[in-house]
Length: 126
Image 1 (cartoon, rainbow, N blue to C red):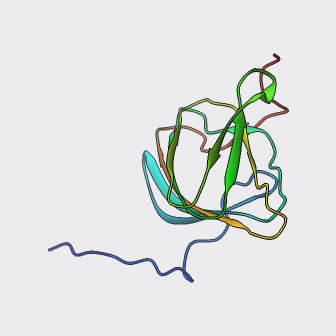
Image 2: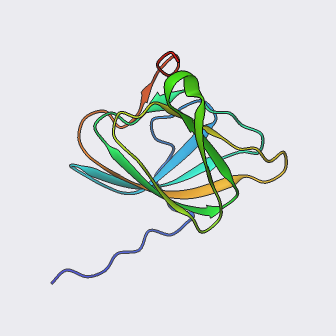
């Protein structure tokens, strides 16, 4: 018989593939998915990246994020505490924490195949 499994907040797997400014800790991982906790410190602007063939689904547990994307990086969405979002596969973006004092904590579910994180120089030109 299988039974439920708990991964305690203090026992998450170590930092995974990183993008400058973002710390990711894995809770669960399988052939075509990953569930992780993502931390972004106050005032951080991450490096540009995408998640390859993975769709990213997230829940913002605390803090406020600005997700920049699109031609020249000129498009953006703001994600607040309690908000859910979806970033389609291969969408180049960067995470911005506009707060100088409050960090971000997000719970992220990735679904797809191939490399999980692809760091890039920037978005497509405007």
